[in-house]
Length: 279
Length: 279
Image (tube, rainbow over all chains, first blue to last red; front, side, top):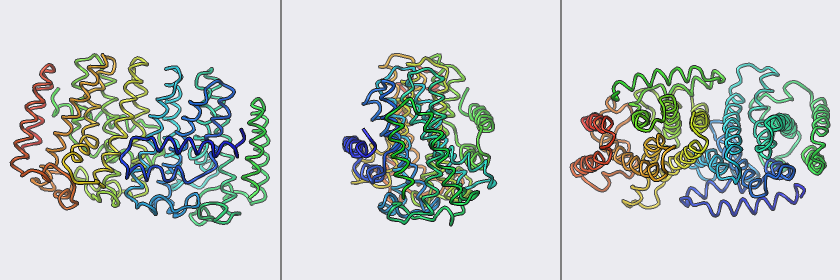
């Protein structure tokens, strides 16, 4: 399955999952809104594709993908709040707090960030693999919050700090997606896949930062040019647009070689790369 | 150890724990502020005392108590935000968002609500007990958020809804504290202890609601009389102060009989009850 086929397939499953959630209706409405607002579902796709090589199982892969997308949505809801990034548009729709008010948005964000642990606990895998997976998830979710905090309040504006922020804020979630299907495998492989995902995540953050200056609002689904205005650390704080674009391509080709063993995925990642870079 | 002895002992351990946290300093400052601002530590005390009857171990009991207190602080930070309860004083000090601004408060709240899973994963107990404990924790943390949401946006103002809200918002965390030390015991006992804790939690919520109308700000450590002003559902929405006070006493005596087997705890709970009710 390529990403274009996976997206609607995943969305259908995510919608069913949210519909079946036994939850106070007014909360359910807010909790469902942002996850269902769209997105490429690249994170869930990575879990799905890599699972084919490890026997992680389709049901487990889908649940893990849903867990990651729910968390990601919860964290975006908080990031978009007026007190943080103050973004009124997300995935082409009004942000959660614009649609429902800040109070509901904050609590729905809390719910979405806490729910994944429960979902991952329900996977049909061995106890020891589950504890390994949960441990990585706990680290990952905390890294995302730490990264967001450091992104808004950087102590200095060094390249090292930017690298660390992008590793935490974006890389860590990709690291989890790459590693999760390997939870039952040798620890060495699990750690290696996490590192690989971390590097992919940092690459996608760079591409995101580049898009932020080259895209229109319609293409982006959120307000463009905000990073520069908010004086955020991005690759473009240190390099010209052309240099950055060249570097991204270079890093991508290097990473591609490392996922050579997962042939279909590696082929599809070229499409994903083009999809993102083309804009 | 009674609660008066436990509080400083626990605070010393909590402070050491937070000091040793490997965390970006500006985030650590916000993350540490509310947990260290005080509080009776009743939740942690319950874990500690009940652990003496189950061989859960002091180290595990302390870590579990810290996990619960961190989550509780994180959830209070979010509840105090201007968009939610808009409380500027907490535990006698400026609320987190007043001290550090809303952005830092939101992200520190996220961190404190996510951290407990990691801490509970590090307990020195058998894998199966750990998974049992983590599952209950996941339910508990989600219940607290659901309860807070329903508290702010009740669909109707029935007594049933009030019972449900108090069970989720306050009872669930006490349920976890009562059950956690029994994670390695028979499932039946684990479930029974959770139910007992749930009922204790609802009782303490009633006492809190009564205090809210009978106390001054200094005694309370937060702004009194807010529930009434915010039109929140409390026992006093349905009963007079005298009726409520009588009912609380009655429920307490009933619950006391059920913890008769934990003799020291049951004795200390009378002191705790007096401490809270006396004000």
